[in-house]
Image (cartoon, rainbow, N blue to C red; front, side):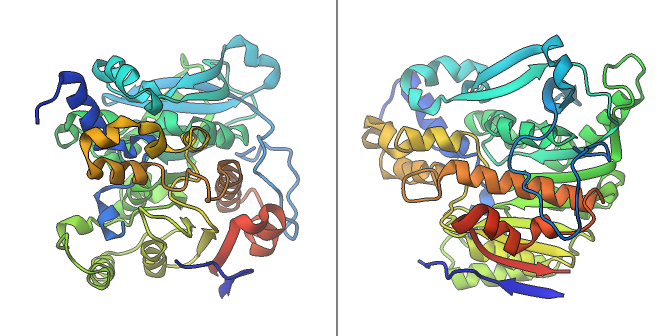
Length: 435
């Protein structure tokens, strides 16, 4: 079945000090604040059967609010890679862990540069409110299915901490590797090419580590994790990573029940195929040719795109969608840029954006910095959809897709456009479904 509906028509449309050098390097990668795309931006680049939430096949459920569980948080190391794990906690035992009510986005910066950045570019440091419990005991209702999360390029899991916690609150173990090949530290130091693992390897290694934790009688999460129920979501470059994972055909990839791409980069690197001065038409042709040479993943896929995304344009996501096999769904968020899933989007908007807050840095480092700052704030300034509305849509869609793919909801009513428009209003643009 192919369904294409649109409840409204979107409008188309010299010498420097050590500190200055460090800031310039960071600013040249300032997608850090937006954790944006890979180099493909050149293309125009309650779970586990334990929730007591009733699900009727014909009635949609709004999953945008926090779920029935409090959320625990632990950090693990997998093959030298830091992985943040968020998981369901019984509310009456949450206080057995250490409550965390805020974290600083400075955690994403290499330790050697934190002081420099804090002093020279404090507008890049965001304090993010959270409500999680470090090392609290896992809820007894498990085992819980797993949702992997892959951050964007120049990003870090902390930029998505509330999004990850939201998914976990609905009864999932959420695991987010800090990819050394393309995280903020790699971007700031240029060390990504020397990383021992790729982003796809980080994801598959994480699955095997969760299996080991689950099997370990001495681990507090023993018998609480069910990787037989496995989903993956990713933002921007992370969207390309989860697609490549699903295409890889390894054990972890074949276990996947669904993948969810949020403003996703395609699973091909056009920067290696297309001249930087190529026209939009030439890039589109190269993208279609590169995708056509690949076999798409054989599993349900949900793509979420921003109508006004200036980093991964809607046309690129549409080409990616066209290449996929069924079942698949594309939800376009109206008046939305690249970052409706990013926790720091709200604070970027509250301070007037990155370009406004940058002050003299733009004058000091030239127009290229201004362009990169604009990419970093894409969708996080006045005139775009309010960040809170973007969070509601993307968080709902993630939980609804996972529940449907895991068989926890008997139908797709929570993903139907009629329900989405009734629940989220003008934030929902065109919706396409092919089942």
